[in-house]
Length: 291
Length: 68
Image (cartoon, rainbow over all chains, first blue to last red; front, side, top):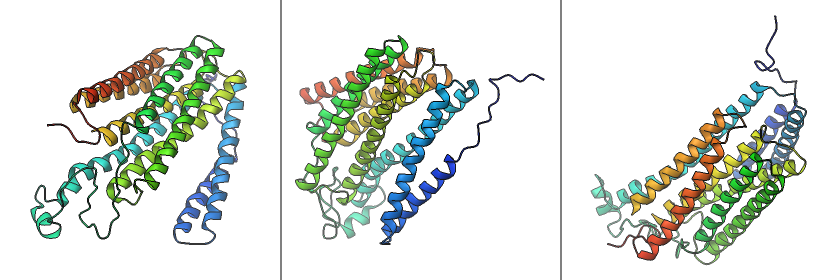
């Protein structure tokens, strides 16, 4: 019986999954312990993080090496695409939860506190002075919650950041076309420009957070506005950081001569991820700062 | 104006989603994915310009305060 080489693939035994599992368990266990003021918590967390980073570099490096040796068949290519699909699904759900929280707070729970819907008595008896206005700069229970003095204006750093990410989407697409047309110089230039724009975005974001904390008193603890603002923009910033690191890895692979117009799923996956992060920012810019 | 912006955003999501679909379905030789992504970048730039224009015209104001 003759088996088709593209039908089935059995990978070699690997120790990376167990290293990754131990790393993740230590990372999360350490984090949970540090929240309970366990003196060892932070140390365990950092150890777990180092182990996870070591696993990512080791495991992904091995995959890149095997891919470059040409030992992967079409079945492996399909499983990479499926893996990327599930990863993206989890990312979409992750951000949907935070956007959902923002929508729920703005349109349902805050108006309820002011007596909207069938909550007339809540407003009348608990907080008769409270009016539902978004952004929430006046709290129903002002004695127990700190209020921000102001919010970040859309027309300042956020608009600049939007411009940065829009440009980075354009430079990455320029690089993508270059890859398909086998133009390596343009591909490298496009990737370098995208990475630079990502780093500029992150620096501006740090400046915005400093402004929010130092001058506006807008903090993670500033009521539901502060929580949703920092959860959304903070996790988005984390994704830009990861996306920038992924692009740097792709750039190094391109410089080493990896990828060609027929075989470049690694590039495609990272490029799509970057576009996704870009669109999430656009959603943030529209729904947090404008509408 | 709000609805125009939201509809624009839905088109952007659609082009991003179709790029994902092509990435999952097509092999690496296909150009459908990069074309969808080019569309998504173009639409995003237009949306940003629409926001600037609408702000300049006084149709929208930041953080939910719409002029009556």
